[in-house]
Structures are given as structure tokens and as C-alpha cells.
Amino acid sequence: MFGKEVFDRFVKLYPEAAMVRILLENALPSEVVDQVFEDNCDRQYSKQIMFSSIVSMLCLVVCRVKPSVHAAFVDNKDAFGASRTALYDKLNNTEIDISAALVDKTYERMAPVVRQMKACRPPLIAGYQTRIVDGNNLAASEHRLEVLRKIAAGPLPGVAVVVYDRELGLISRVYLREDAYVQERAIVLDTLGDVQKDELWIADRNFCTSAVMHQIDVSGAAFIIRKHAQNVRFHVLGDERKIGETSTGVVYEQAIGIEDDFDSTLVGRRIRVALHEPTASGDTEIVLFSNLPCSATALDISDAYRKRWDIETTFNHMDRMFSGEIKALGSPRAALLAFSVAAIAFNTMSVVMSALRVEHGTQKVDEEVSIFHIGVNVQSDWSAAAMVGDAEDWEQR
Image (cartoon, rainbow, N blue to C red; front, side, top):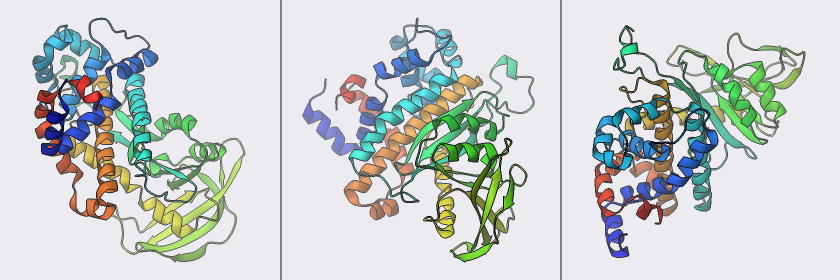
């Protein structure tokens, strides 16, 4: 146990590393991680290696403190008490429900911290909690495994659909598939059971189906989803009206009825934005579907949809700061666990940024502080944190 004087000196010298280490140890204490494993495992069991040891080791690789899983194992093999083969067996067979549940649990532990700091961003639409959903195909892995060496292209280890809590700035949930070629809209059906009343779900056209929109509406939630060219049947209920103009284009609105496969009709709105400039893919307009009440204007809906790019920014930060897509991990389950750990690491950095905004003001932090460079500082200072104290010491801070 290190003393207060040593701790205070470390915090002064390495503030970013101290904050991240404290958050990680409190978000991922060994007993919580192992309980997540026990609550969600189907076939696996803890015998030689505890799941918490696997997650701690993977954190070092994902946060780029160690260059590879092998290097992390070599430097910490006494803590595992098992062979490298046993380690990889455990890692490669981690069930995807366990990885997803780990993200759920850490979000539950970090969300109150952001709320207590009063660091929540205002909602995009008054009265609704924003959830932005998007898919992420993991990068192709190396041909390290013998079974993959006959595949010409790099094998794709899996796909993740990510739900982002915009007000808190945290990834709240991940939905994982070992089949990298499954359509995202098929995975999003799994999310519908988790939709809560008074949430606002924002998604791109990949998720635009009648089933998705009807189920969100039945759940008492709202949606803003970009129109897909073929996946939705609807009929118009009134003439299109020009509503106004935003910085990106002229906004039009039309009442519609969205049909499903059971002869039910959902009354909603079709928002069309005639763009001033074409998109990178050449689109000259963007069409949105929404069931938001009239208190949310078409201009509000158009502006809210533009914030969907917040999740793309999140993916970009994850890619730049962390090794969440480890090419050497050919096993889909291992790769998806690494991605989940990267999501947790991003949430930790996001909480740090929230704390800085509370202390120094949103404008100053957004203009002068880079979350990427904080990540670089944490990576370089991690070894110093390890010298100051072990996991239990940091968890008690």
C-alpha cells in the first residue's frame, strides 16, 4: 500500500495516468469481472485462469502498454499460474455474451460518475435520452492460425453493433457476432428488446426497416433513421411542405404511414433535406423517417441526425488510441473480447474528458485538449503507475 504523499506526487506528475488507472480499477475490479463471467458463461468455466486475469492482461495490450498478448503474458506469467496454451484457450473461447455483458456492467458503473459530476450534455431533443447506433466490422486478422492460412484475403473476425449514449458520452452496449458477414440490420433486431421508453434512437439507413421502427414506437421510444431505398413500405398522408433551411440544406416535411408485415401502420414523418452540397458518395438529398411528436420540428430532427457522426468520432478515437482490433487474434471470440475492452477503455477516457470539462469549462477543453494525446500520455506513464501500486491500491483511491 502506497502512502498519500507518494500518491499525491504521482498525481501531480502524471494526472492523466492516475485518473485513468483509478477509473479502470474501479470499473473493472476483479470480483465484478469474475461475477460477469459466472453470470453469463454457458460452457466455459474458471479452473486454471480467472477471467479477470484475462481482462487485465488484455487491457495492457489494448491500451498499447504491451505490444502483444504474448508479451503481456511473458511479463506477467507468474500471475496466471498456467501455460501460454491455457491462456490462449481461455481467450479464444470467451463467449461473446460474456464480452457484451462486460461492457454493460462497466457502463452501469461509469454512468453514475458522469451524472454525479453533472457532466451530462443536454439532450438533442427535449425529453428524450439519445442512443446512437452503428455497426463496426473488425479489421482483417493475420494468417497466424493454421486454419486461416489457406484464405487468400485476411479473415474477418466479427462484427459489432454499438450503442452510444450521447448525453453521457459513453458506449452503453455492444451486440457482437462471430459471423463478420451478417447484415447489421439483422443484429439490430437484438437491440430492440433493450429499447426503453423516452429514448431517441438515431441510426443510418443500414438499420432502416419497418420492424425496427415499429418496435421502437411500441416501446414508447422515438427514432430518427435515414431512409433506405428498398427496405420500407410507406404511403403519404399529406403534401410535402417546406419548413426552413439549415446550414446544410433546405428542409421539407411530409406526413406518412409506415407499413409493417402485419397490416399495421405507424404514422410518422418523412423529413427531406435538399443538400447545398452533395455528400462524398454523391447524394444530393438525405431523407429521414421519424415518429417524434410535432413539438420536435423538422429542423430539430435534421440537426439531431447530424449528431449521428458522434459515434463515428468514437470509432475513430478507439482506432487511434487503442488496439481494439488486434490483427494477431484470428479467433473471432478473442477479437471481439479485445474490441469490448477497447470500448471500456474509451469510456474511461470519456469520463476523464467529462471531468476536465466540469473543472475547466467545455469550450476551453474542446478547443485545447485532445483526447488522443491524453491517451498517448496514459500509455507512456502506465509503467510508472504500476510501480506506485498494484490493482488493489488503485481501486481504493
